Length: 126
Image (cartoon, rainbow, N blue to C red):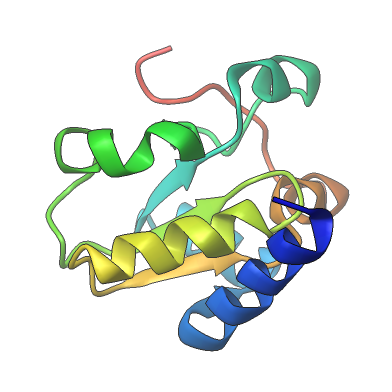
């Protein structure tokens, strides 16, 4: 797959999903109104200073196989994040196709969350 192919997949996914900005995601986090799903690779979590406190961590490559066991019921709101908001768009699209109905992607990903100064933590169960 070329970079152009990946970019097209992301653009296509973003036409089918909802995105949420960091401020809205923070408000949902503070209200405990959703589950956060971090789809970055483990080395990215270690390098990037953590994740949204309490987020479920399932790398994108394992999401389809592990979603049913790792995530709450399909009606539970989920905000997906990655490093910049591209893989999270793909993950949100996949989850929607798998039957989750309240999935959003964090626009700008972890970078947007961190730049906004929102809290950093460990994935759930870490």
